[in-house]
Image (cartoon, rainbow, N blue to C red):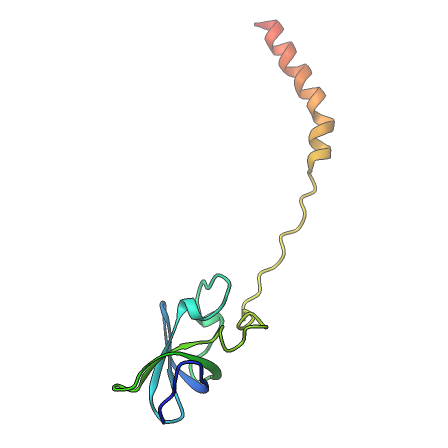
Amino acid sequence: MIYKPGDIVKGTVTGIQPYGAFVVLPDHSTGLIHISEISDGFVEDVRYFVKVGEEIELKVTAADELHRQYRLSLKAAHPKTKARSRIRRYEKVPDPVIGFRSLETKLPEWIDEKIKEKNHD
């Protein structure tokens, strides 16, 4: 089968590289999901979004009919969900105990110390 740009296809991830993921389609043709087509957000590692052996839904963005190779997009196939959520979640950094209010209370003390130091010189 020949796919055209805009077609939605299912494919199985066969390999992952720093620059993207390789996919085999049902008709045994191949495709590449470039790292820029994984998600709308920053992609630190492609493996956070797809795994080898995983079947995923993709959108064809370009086709080389002669070689039966395709450029594919995960984010274009899932526009409302912003592609896929990350597998690895980052914990929220806790709010610091010391804030601007602490600085406000310490500032007069620091000013007095500097004035005393200056007067001793």
